Image (tube, rainbow, N blue to C red):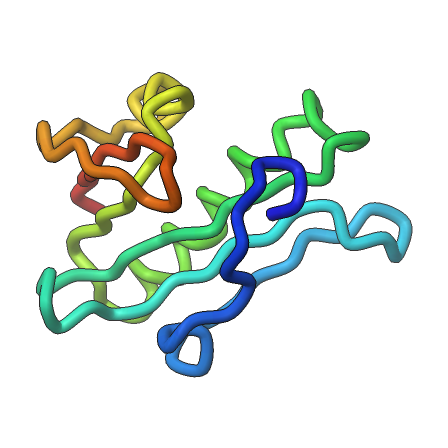
Length: 117
């Protein structure tokens, strides 16, 4: 959050979401959250983040795969996420497709993406 200048650390969804942490040698190195969105009628994954010093180790991909598996285990069939446009290619490589819905979130361009699981 600090690295990218985002100001809202907690929101109204945090208490509803399931949060995941990935550890390396007892050090938390990556995180994400997911929740069922009634508004979007699917699960939404968000706030995927990897500590700067641990990037390049596929931890973002592992977090995403872990969240997808858990959503599937819960009976979820579709996942959406609001990706920063600068990293949309990462999600495309993981099987997500852009929904062509560019929007601003904290002055940063994002695009909604979807994947069937």
